[in-house]
Image (cartoon, rainbow, N blue to C red):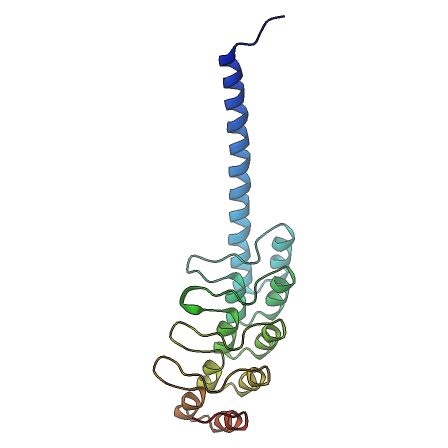
Length: 192
């Protein structure tokens, strides 16, 4: 019996190692493609495609090139069914991204009541702030979405927080002429 040449053992090892790396690279490309498809489907509100991609292993916490998670994208567009699917598959409801952005801030800024309610029911931090001090409560006060303001207050949002310009939720509502929002804030303890 002949003893194998040490050089040929090294070559065989290198071949197997290169094959292993190519399999890893191929699976990484496939995962990236699934994640890109997930971001696109979530933005479009295609719940069926989102569900398929999540079941195939797409990451429910993937971020786009602007550092917004797929949950933020769906929440900010009011895609309720997509948000439900993402949360069921493990999306982090409280992940904070660039500028202090959260899914709840994205949803509350658009006045998406159903999405806001779902997020707070799933534990979203109602008092999270952006780097400029804006809260999820301030945004619907400024835009006049009283139903969103009400649910946030009922879930413990602080009506007295101030942004970097010293503005409170009540000040923002008042300057936009949202009298009913101002009255609701006062009823929940807002002072200024």
